[in-house]
Image 1: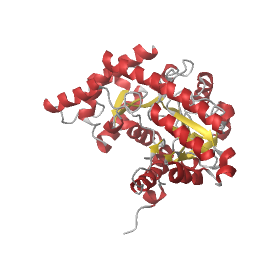
Image 2 (image 1 turned 90 degrees about the horizontal axis):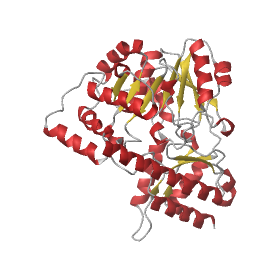
Image 3 (image 1 turned 180 degrees about the vertical axis):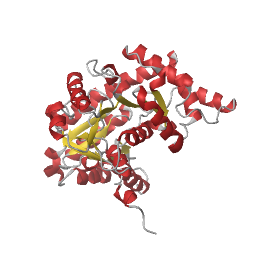
Image 4 (image 1 turned 60 degrees about the horizontal axis):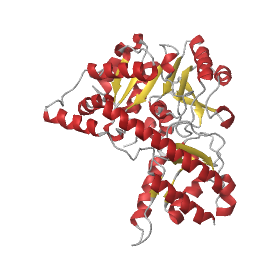
Length: 394
């Protein structure tokens, strides 16, 4: 039976494809050969804090496993409202918060709420690949605009204004960004939102790494600017709940009824057990643990980034959040006998047992020069990765 054009139009998520290739190579390694070091997937090596794990077990034992309201547990929505007030000094009405099946579920709901077939959102290039694939799957599109290091790999208001077309319905930004770890300047975000709002569009911003910001200038939520901004977020990164598949979104009040209907039909609700567990994310013990981890992620960046520069990688912009390094590997191509970052990734897997992600996943107009390294692995693994790279380049 022929598959739908929609299904065939969605490209692979090459991060996961590379992981599959690496696992296959690792299975063939002989006894005594060093194991693979995975610096390709953006998943913290920390799991959910102990109070969160305990809350999940307690929910199961108490039989709290049935559907919740489509918008999520009222108690969890209120905890998030309190979190915005305490952490960012921003008042966000709990009624504007929707609990979702991860940030990916939040993006699907936002895209279905604001985009019709043929519509587009403007996005920076590079950006997270699954975002544009989600848009393609519903018949919309992402128009990627070049965003280089001179603008922190983020869009500018001038770009948005010049690129706006008859089917443009808004922008989809990420701050801090995957793959670059860089945030958008608050003043530039304000200007972009003014352009979008003047044209009747929507400003959607992915803030799933906001809790892992390392610079006070950038560590503020876009929700402080305007209640019409849509913020997508997740319990995966800062709170370490990756496999729990739980996120949230903050919407303009007028959009809540439509998104509630979409949630009812597409998801019913987010995972009930994960929601009850997430209530414990905001306990003092959990927050203290998450803050300790945030500091550890900054220390990993501060070790790994200068080490890569010393080895010859180009990193023109220091990441200010998340746990990624977006590195220009082209100065090393001739020495290693490769032509692009895809070939380099394959060489690293075979000869150094080290996995990174090539730029083809993140760039629509891929120059083939960049690698994304994830520094979500332990400091010991990062140190070993540097030593393997040094030996390879010797």
